Image (tube, one colour):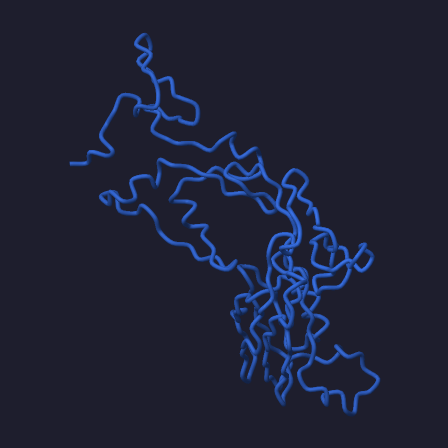
Length: 282
């Protein structure tokens, strides 16, 4: 016997109008029988009102889309709410049960020392300069050709909304021997003798997911991506050194801390991620 979810007039969340035979639902409920728990204030225009089943399909783990199925079996009493309970899926830079809060910048805690940015290494061996592939991070991708340079790849990755800043360099400094007139990032990333490219994540910090390679066409040698150094820095609201003002989406830094460049130096990120050398007594 399903005693927890027995039928009730207007789902016990409304009053039946005997003149019309229609339910007049309590605030927060809708449907012919008031059977749907709806989103508060329609997410204030800062998100989408979605069912539990739809929200499950938008699940992420460490920023990586990881959808799962919820409520596909109508006979599973544990997922009865899959199409009856709704919640807000907030747009970027908003949070809260009804998306009423503006998100503040995140960053590394400047008081925790001896931590590292993550480095992932791309290895590409190609002899015909004709191939291409896609490099993906947290559900977004860039197209890379065999003749792209490190500068090209850096520009492309920094154009993704899920990446704030990466720095790309060649792993082997001797690669420039015989080419002293070239800029440090002007050589192509795929080489007949194997090109090793270091991709350093400056923001987001922390242990980020490894990038994926897909849609490989025409690369005639090995192509891999590996994590050579895990990120150990924090990536937390206001860098843990301020309080988020959710009305403005700005951090109010504690005394002695200021906006950083994401690497502990003074900068424009407004994240409280730098020690303020001009603060009195610091």
